Image 1 (cartoon, rainbow, N blue to C red):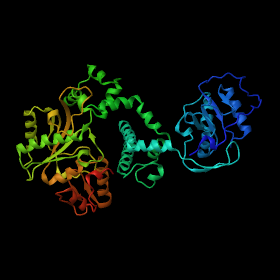
Image 2 (image 1 turned 180 degrees about the vertical axis):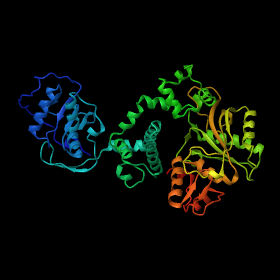
Image 3 (image 1 turned 45 degrees about the vertical axis):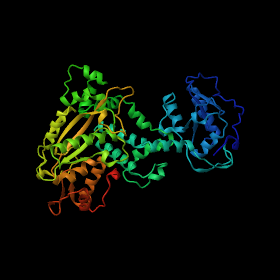
Image 4 (image 1 turned 90 degrees about the horizontal axis):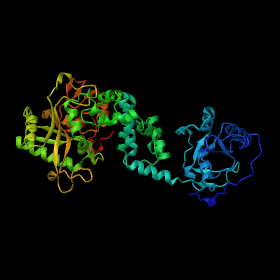
Length: 507
């Protein structure tokens, strides 16, 4: 660790008298005070650039002091430069903008201090650096440990912020209908989620698949600066903010959100107040229960809902089979989700027909069904399995909003409510899917996720095994037949893969 006592302080020296001396030009940009590092730049070039900057209204200091806001260097090693700055005796080195000469030249071209971008910054590094005698740098060898950078990335990655920002970039790409970047960011996020421990440096991800240059650039920003400028730019974009808000409403997709945005609408209140907008039934329910269903659903709430639906299904058909799917089944580090997904079947083929509608009627009789949209089965085995990755399959399903009472929760968890909320219930989104028993294993695999894992598994089946896999079936194109499966293990065996536990299915 470098201490100020280890390195000499920057000595103030007499300023040379020259044609460009400050005082002969008006200072236009008082918020910026520049210091040009002479090492590598040379005294003649430094004097010329000082005169140039002052002629354009910049304040340029010859001595490094606490008044300086922007340190500009040319061809200096980052570690050596930062070591020198830390030993310069300044009160707070972290407040400085330490910049490459490119920022200076851009500013001279524009005639004003340009906005600092990532490419302008000289980042803090962690190497062992040997500092030479030349210029202003002390002749000692020091080990530079940047603890703040390491602590920052530990916090960032342990809280999954790295994957969160990639998901936001993927979402923004989806809003822009950029399928390639959207898929690339989602793949990268899945790879990072699958790692057994937190990443502390870029070297730890060398050789990993699906981490492109854009992803690595974002990660490098976070590692160095504790933030991603690209993500902050996306987050502050008005269109992204509006589309993210609108699509948070149940029943509103990107196309509808884009249509509302183009009409000049920016808030949910504006949408509800717009007389020319006709909401469909699902969207009306989405707005009606928005406060509840926009909240996360906890594991305890998912468990309570499973008990309710399982009890209802068994009341109708005692041998019915119900499975909790999605993130709550796989436990991929998820304590919370947006909704709860269930898969329903019967041990005997054909017995599942009509079961889902009877479950819905029973939930309605219990007074807990707030909304329901039922879709009948459209499964056509002659068109399956599909080569395209589809978000929805063709099984019979219903999209529900259920009323979950406080009294239905077990002791180990209560309802997710706002502070001070006295109401004893909340609305929760539930998806219920019914499948024939011979399709159950495929549907269970597909609905368990993750979405990226399913996409990659289907790609592996197609590219490496000459098979087609989806939520309905596995088809061997060489043998020209559908392969049977009564469990997920059977499907992995057909693909020649070891079984992957649900909690491992990120990528």
